[in-house]
Length: 304
Ligand SMILES: [Zn+2]
Ligand SMILES: [Zn+2]
Image 1 (cartoon, rainbow, N blue to C red):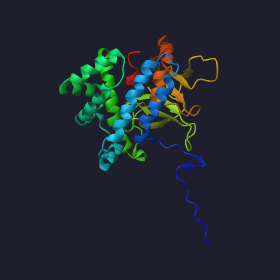
Image 2: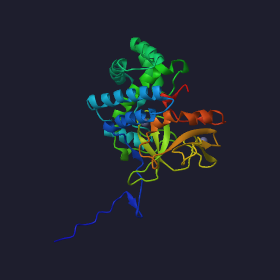
Image 3: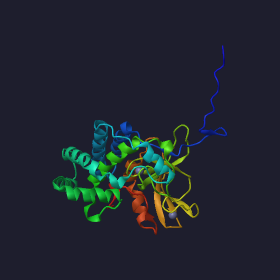
Image 4: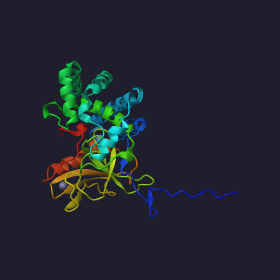
């Protein structure tokens, strides 16, 4: 009888597990879990109608993500070229043409949803928009630039693009991604919604920024401005709740005067970066009265 050899685990350095740099989205679970979280957060919230609407939108995202055939993965040579040049392997600006089909399917499903009147009106307009207008809207979403006068219209386009970008990201090997720049997703170049301190095995207490477009999460140090990269002059604000410590805080930076949410999933495993971003609107309202400007990007929370 021979003892089985002990394989050294390369992710464990000095006995402490090293958090992986990138965590890729799990297509089958992401939107499904997010929809459940939106529904849970809607209970007793004064934002309930909007949170329930977003729960339905997110369900469609999940249904389509499961129903659509798998995408061709980003070619390995492109991933390696991007890696060598510290570029994101997903070219979001080139996604447009492939997105139209997904967008049309998404809009069709969204038609049946129960929704607030303004959202219904916006949907009707997007559904009758011609290809040129839709392509322009996709371009806005991909450039993270949503015109204030048509945020409700762009919400649908953003949601559809999230499906497409997440499908692409889900097919990437996270171990082949490299840091690009502060506040830039290593998979698609998108902006983070917020960051999250996670609690799952192997990376407890590690912090990850979460992409607003493709849902890739990338590792960042615990105290650092994700807008300018400063690790000095960082502070934290929260809405006073009176009971235990807040699970969503604003990380503020005195170097660039911006702020971004940090979520403590290690304290509450059901937190979802997008759902809890929307549901913690009270923190945004609190921060509106300060000199700090919101740096987190979330197409579901624009215009508030
Ligand atoms: Zn991304
Ligand atoms: Zn900063």
